[in-house]
Length: 491
Image (cartoon, rainbow, N blue to C red):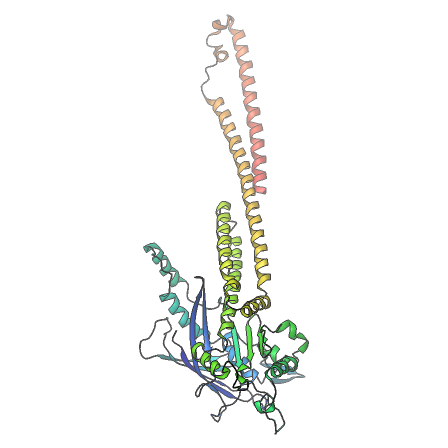
């Protein structure tokens, strides 16, 4: 997709260890669709050209420190920092100022996501937090308006989609946010030695492996800060937490350092610094420049691996949210319908998980190793197992709900039958009976009774017996009905 130009000034409090700088360059935007379900938008800010880079206040190129990178990423992910601290009544402001001012120029999408054929717009994003969301919304609006599946939607579906778009404003709050920091061959190590100002300079004779070993072994607090977006103002970043926060080196080459976390991954490579060798099979410097020109990133293979793992993690997380929503609506829905929805969602999720498991499609064994290591670092297997357990619990709960509703319907049926029995008894009581013994008083001679007094006596006795039987039936029926309704409502 068409990108944009940007300029961002980072002006902290006065500090020699954290000087003010200006980040300037062009952002390349890519939209990738994974398995017809998950959209990945990547904004690739590159600092390596004649115009794209890091400058001091005198407009001279200078290196970016770890805190500069953290401050830049805070516009997209938020950075963890203290704005001020109080000690014995004295307030000390932080030297990390995350109130950024990001200038966006030549953006070809308006605020409604419409593509501009001419006169691109400019934006100024000020303040703390994820100010970059204002830029991401424009691209997301464009995708939702213009990118869709190739299917023939009916008029009702189109109206429903239009109504949903009008009643549900576009937002990026529930999207997954992730950052990849890609540092290659320009990594430096300032020293106080005037003869060797840069420990990693090529004239020092230090090997690529030694550079990576030094960073991993002697700069663990900085790596922890980079992976957690925790600036250097917090001087107590414990190196003992390195294994838990940063984990193992995902790269299988000893001249690369690749770390992956829940929100940030970091790639430090050195093969572009390898000494020129006439017998070498590959001109690594030329190869690296070619890759950057095409992909705007030094290691496109790992970026794709990372995107696939993140897409899989996003699918699992989305399925958990669906299960929560399904469980919340279970009380007011039909149990069979809920079981059907849960079964369909389970089948759909299983199909997507199988599609996302792409190890067999990897071209190189090294990519398979990196895929496994990244999956392990992002704890994806645990998330998948947890989702399976939640689905099993949901299935059991829905089946119990179905059994309960079946038992309850049995009680209701019994109560209805009891009521029908009472109504039948009342019908017997009030309908006109044609039974012979009821006619004793009218035609006693038919029964061999010629004495009127005897006929009246028998008639009274028969009426009393009939009334007693009906009254007993009514009392027993009412008692059974009350008991049944009491059991039903108690459940």
